[in-house]
Each structure stands twice: as structure tokens, then as C-alpha cells.
Image 1: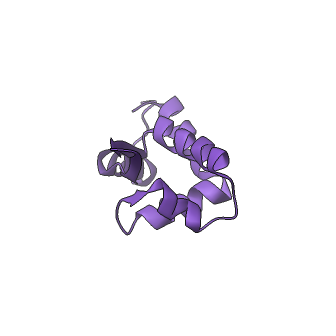
Image 2 (image 1 turned 60 degrees about the vertical axis):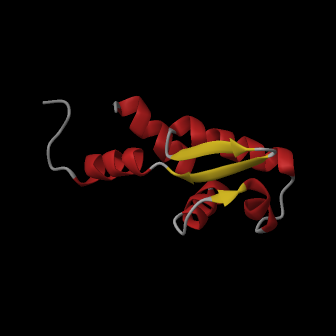
Length: 92
């Protein structure tokens, strides 16, 4: 991953709704309607937030029939956390 990738993840998780969605997904994959039940937002607004999360790479999505399921992309999360925790600069 590159600095723009890390910055996009930070920007994406910098929104309170998206951060709460990410927190929900820590317990496992969920379909969109289950996520929507927890918020006082419209379906198009949820779609926008999910698009941001999936474009950042931190969330995976897959369609099963008419339902869309979301889960945390563990590989991207691990890379992001390693970047944050590393004492090594990528600029060196």
C-alpha cells in the first residue's frame, strides 16, 4: 500500500457513521439491511458510506442473490495497522 491508500483509509474512517459501521463489522459479516437497521439514515446514504468503505479497501463486499454482504478486509487492515505501528519510515 502507498501513502494515498493509507490516507484514504484514514479519511474514510474519519466519518462517524463509517467508523460505527466498521465497528459493527468487527463481529463478522453483515448484510446491508442489518447495517441499515442500526442507523437513522436512508438506503442511498448507506450505499454511499459502503461505497467509500469498499473503495478504501478496508471493507469487502459480495453479493448473494439480492443481498449484499460486507466484512472487514483482514489483509488490508493488517497492512494498515502495521503501517501505523511501524517505527520504520517508508520514506527512507
